[in-house]
Length: 362
Image (cartoon, rainbow, N blue to C red):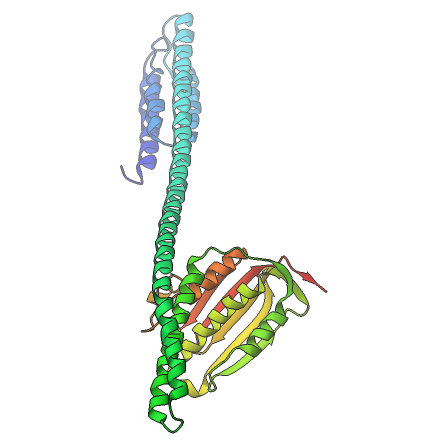
């Protein structure tokens, strides 16, 4: 079947009309020479559109009637009327059957399309459900593992901390080398505690406690408390004015802090722009959403990692769990919001934490 087939069939129908009409006007009136026009109507069966069937039914009917005036006389009058009437009946009854068939085909096509859409929709739902079940099972396993590991690690870490305290107190102030080693041990113990806390925060399904909070005041307090590395220029641009929103300020603070950690770590990993390092935290309204944007001029995120950056346990750093942004996403989703990341390897990255504008203003 070629794309030009409907045109070719239409041309064939016209040719058949000419041939049958030529035969019709060369035979006496009493001969049923108009009945072969049925072949023309049957040919339109293979043209998907309904219009050619109707058009050729009209054309062939007119040719049958025209044949009365152009065919040679012959035969009795009742035979002439009977044969012409038979031809018209055959043409329109055939056209009616073909039109019904085409209507059925169209309905089947619509139903088939609807069925395909339903199958596609259900398949997508099943895939999403399967992904959710896999994620839930993954979180359950991680939660159980976290509980076991944390229990096994907390006790030795407590002993190490207590021993460090005693060692630091017993170490002479002029023993700089010894104090340096002890401080290094203490720093890594703190790091281990932080990792355990990160795992706990991610695996525990804690409910949120919402209260009406001044968003800009919360962001301003976070920017003032956050310990930004000295060589990074930290700017704050608050544009929500007196906007209040129902949020869990402790959890939202955690989400913003994680985003700031990600931005500062990205800059620290970039040696090229270390002297021009800058992080901006900005708040504004956009499309009925409260936006908290953290923008940095670090190296950006490689395109191959963009789809993975929010996945738990994904990290490009050598010593990191990759849970920071995953926790931020979880917190924002608990607020019926979300997180979006834009990145450019030339200009850096921006993390957009958004909340629905269920706010009040004073």
